[in-house]
Length: 400
Image 1: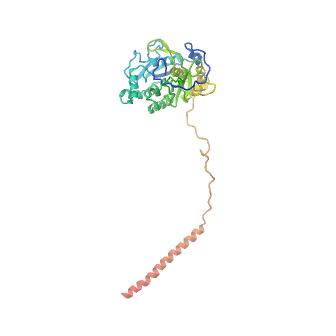
Image 2: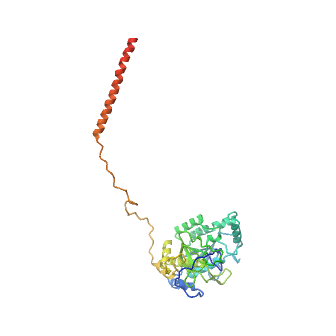
Image 3: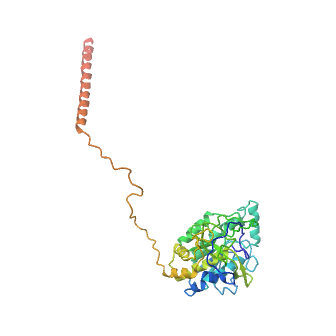
């Protein structure tokens, strides 16, 4: 989510500013590179051999910024917009630019899954949501499945990093979606690194009527690295979503990136913060292609420039440190994924409450005595039967 060249609706409300981390006093052009220590990381690798999928509004491949480094993928959301129109690829072009500013030798796979702010299709979808008619037509139904399809397509076509500068909760009709959650699981299972913007709903301005600070997806899905935005002074950007799913922070204020109409423009948002972290992940994978998603996340967390209070829902585990992350990635050993035999206690709990009880053996003599008494009783009964029956038989013969 970017605020000046926005692609998704920004519902924004407020909590409080986050704890500070080391930062710059002001924001000169390209300040994010210094804050993230990108030059040091790029002396080790520039992302060669890694494909980053940018799931967004499309990317203008012909921009001089890209120089053949962007491949166009499918348009899963549709709506009728075409490259060259002002509302096609505005947000996505900026995000691809930010990825490549960090990992210039990586390649970007563009997959269109959302609409730009001014896209007429988006306006139709917003009206349908307001009228309670979402899903009643093929266009909105297609939009609802676009992100899940985009994730699967990206992974199946070689993307090791999936950058998602978007948030379904900001549409007002989105949220947790089972097909998207399944797509996230599929991607992580294939070894892909999923990165998403935390959301722009964290404003403390009471006039920001669209503020929310609610759960934003895909940032909230397990397995996704959620990225908060910080400003040049080292604190949380006032719009950055405050939530416990935040994993890491990156610069998100006055970030210059390519425009779909040519040239460059500065923008704010958790969107560029996400793209910058996606570029960092590409550098890490270029240095060590065997890294698992969990290893990438752990290294980003371990090497981050921590807030004084440690983890916070404002900035997660702190500002990403690209140089330290790449160095740690290059020396990481391969993760062991084989099953490990259980070597713990015999019982998972406390085991039996008491020791087993041993009963004394049954006295067999009682069985013999009882059995004999039963046998005598049976014989007596049989004898009595014949004894009383025989006289009656004789009397019957005399009468005859």
